[in-house]
Amino acid sequence: MKTGRFERITTSNGFLILNSVLIVIFLIACSFVVTGCVQTGASQVAEPKDVKDATVKSDLDELLTTVYCYCGCTRETIEVCTCDTAMNIENDFRDRLLAGETVEQIRTDYLDTYGPQYYAVMPVEGINLLAYAMPIIILILIGGVVFVVLRRSTRSMQKTAAAGAHEVPDSQVSNEAVNKIEAELERYKRES
Image (cartoon, rainbow, N blue to C red; front, side):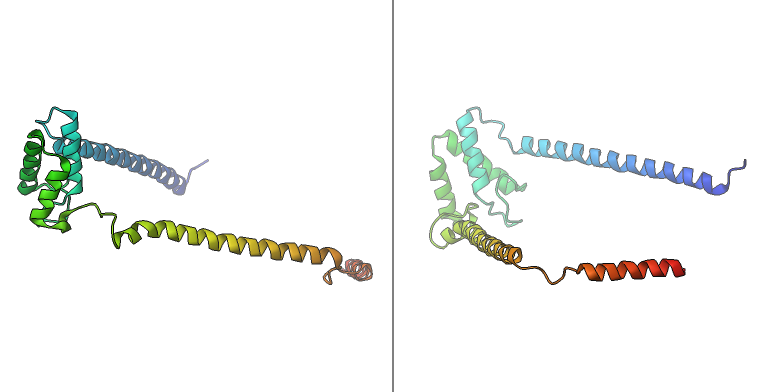
């Protein structure tokens, strides 16, 4: 029995599909490895090297993540920004923390010098309270609307079920009609 050329093409297509799937899986695995390496490398770069005390390190991390860099490159926190200005600010913050200043003193001094627009955390005061409260208010409103709609639909279904139990539906076919249809069907079968 001869095999045609289409069987060979099908086999090679299956082989190509399998290879394509393996290549895609390999690329996905490589992207996870590269992403992990980049994130690990980024966290190692952002870690202060001279700080030995854990409290000073955590205070420095808090400062670096709550204040924007004033360099003008992009609106990024000092921890994320890679310019020389951010490095200088980080070194200044580290020196001031080692000298005994608190996080609040350093942050207040920085924001007084460069302006409140460089504070990365939205303060919970004034109109900002509305921004913090809106997600909760929206969730409560959506929940209320869903509750009302479900309650109305269950009530209407209960009323329909109660009304349907007492009435005979008009859609039921009488026995006479069923007998007539069956007779017509039998007559049709005999004629065919």
